[in-house]
Image 1 (cartoon, rainbow, N blue to C red):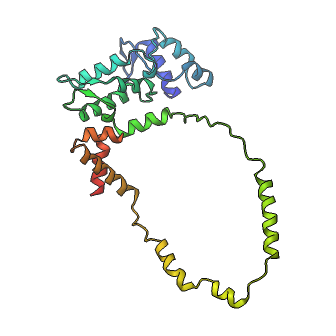
Image 2: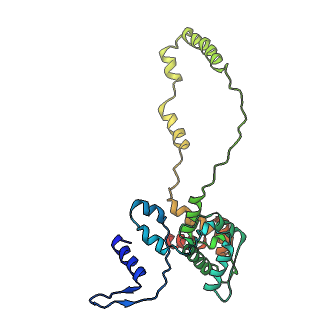
Image 3: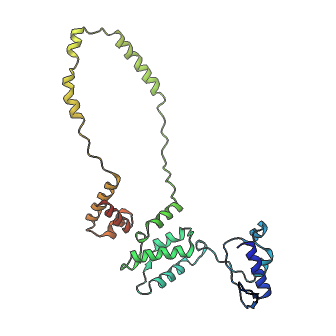
Length: 259
């Protein structure tokens, strides 16, 4: 609120009357002001962006509402939201989803919770319980980014390194090099007979390198995996989503893109 508007509000609260625009007559008013803010007004007073006299004029009964992530009645709030949105056939929330909700920071507070539950209730229509695969992909991605799991610490046993290996290799390499240096050279005609012909090596090299398989994109591989999982689940998308670890709307989207 600009400082000029703060001064006008302070005058209205002090004199209990207002003057409409394009009028010279003041109208008495009897009002009660209820204000809400997410900022620290005392810090704003020190910074000079909020009037101190207006603060003490408004500061009557102060009620601090905790953020959703700090509340202890998250289950009650979620249940009331579902009852308001789905009065008939209200779905339950599975313990796994509720545990997921309790670990999330909820930057959008109650409005974000209401949107998440409304979307999940639509995806779980007819099932009676909201599971994790009913939640939207965006929310699940935010949850994973907000609480990234720590990689497991693998305990690898300490094995003694073969310290004598370089010395042994060097000791064996010296006699071999000496013997190769002292060996008589083969005559040129005999060496030519023993040397393999390039034509003899060509068939073996051709057989050793088979033709590479045709490459597929990552999207094609994902669609093929989803289709094979759906076939194994007899077309049950809920079962396939649980096996793949993705939500049902992700399966719909991938299959639609794969057409």
